[in-house]
Image (cartoon, rainbow, N blue to C red):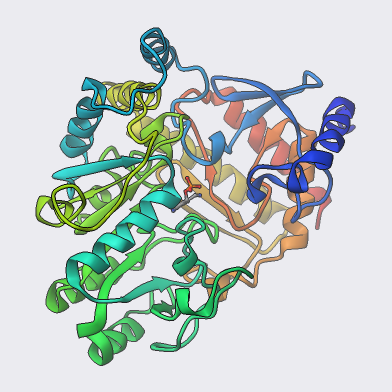
Length: 431
Ligand code: PMP
């Protein structure tokens, strides 16, 4: 199979490189880990993306998570179109804000009250501030390999031992910003207990991805989320579940519903905006009421609760609630992941496959990935060859081994078969 022509993409990306740092508005989109230039997208439709050369791809990125219903979903588009007719932003209350907040409170177990922001990063920054303001404590526990947006205090890289002070992983983040961030290993219950026993009365909160998407998909081991819940309750620390990726994705009520563990605060993003820029954080009313203007923890936003974004989110959540696509979507995803796994085995490639609902990662790593320490041993060069081979066959995957793939409700049996067949060819050729 010959590579498809992407000459216009190449030329457009050269143009972007001259005026946009790295040619991209978010580094995850650059093909740094896999080589070559990104594909420049013209449009999406359902489960497909079309590039500006006219090539069609089956889209397993879905804008990095939001498009569980695919692109241009009719219900979502008509919600957006109706809202557009009335104006784009008012900086004053609208009915749409209450509608989306009510839907979120109805669907997400931990949420009694919710505040809308514009991104997952903003949700993380605000949730951390709230946990600190509410408890009057400074320390935050995060886990190596979990990503919570580019918040200064959470940009701390690989795990260090309990109570070791975190070192910033980006220039421009002062040491002081991460001095109160404790970085632990995901799924390490003993380390977590030890940390709480040493510093429990200083810990404002624990933040985690209940299913990690940002070191590839990594599932919580049995008892891990439950232990976080227990320790937070015992030490009056705030349990912050980052459901930016998992919310409305791994179940209608997110990972907290799927695993039956309820945090104090959760963060939402991606699916909640149906492709428009929305983030949110919500939880117990008593904690949420510590935010301004009721309480004194300050957080604000000129465009927060934007009516077009709210309309997109409302239509998306209503559609998910009405159609309950989760069982079918999960079955479809499992058929795909079984096929990918079988193709990798047939090609004799060491691998593991992790999945939760419609999120999955094929790891080029023979060991089950339970933490960042294990994930960092993935064969990223083999992944790069896999990625390029799939792209050439019209399968658009995340351009890094350390990301989740997402299936969408509009994917058909033919799409799944085509993807498996492409993987069989590619995996055979990259041994
Ligand atoms: N939390 C998680 C779990 C995420 O996956 C992401 C983005 N990939 C974020 C937070 C940050 O969200 P945003 O990119 O909207 O700022």
